[in-house]
Image (cartoon, rainbow, N blue to C red; front, side, top):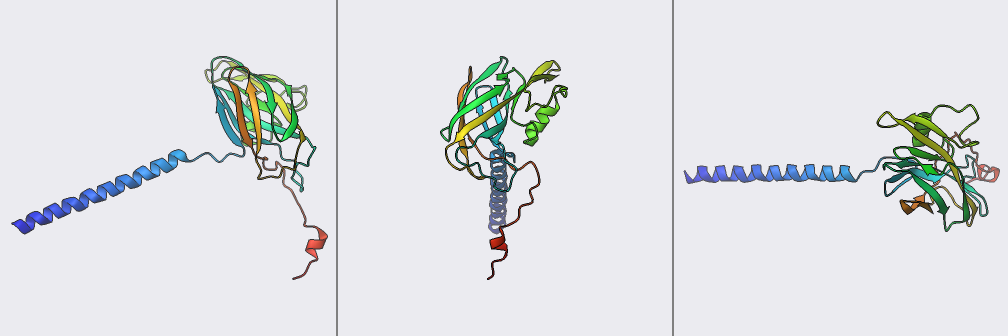
Length: 217
């Protein structure tokens, strides 16, 4: 009788241990999933009700890739306003550049987005710009405007288009490097984003220099 009781108790302990192990394993999976970030091309940041996504320097789409010292680097990102009131991009600065220029629309309409840079630079920017009707006066990059699009509630929302260019890069910037850029908004305030160089938007066919191709071993 005592031996049977010991077997029952032993089986209960094993079952409880297995349950705890499974629970711990499941908790680990949940925690890992919660910390995973979406695979996006650029950086993300948030300040107040504004969300900056897919932020980066526009790729030069050539084999050299790097931005040389003294050159200018256009930026590309989407700024989404999840608030109930409009905001405005008032300035952009970076310790890696002499100055920055802002052209086109600077207002971020409540419940809508402001697209900065070429509309085809990244997937998220393409999705935002495709929701707006095509303008007959030209592309968004040559003539930044705002277009009406359906908002989350079905009301007309403004999808704005603008451009920001870092002027006078102070040192060479290669893909893989991050450039700190500070965006200052009228109401939300400043936010600094570590911006990478976006991936090329065209297929590049680059050949090694002749001296490397002819070199022997």
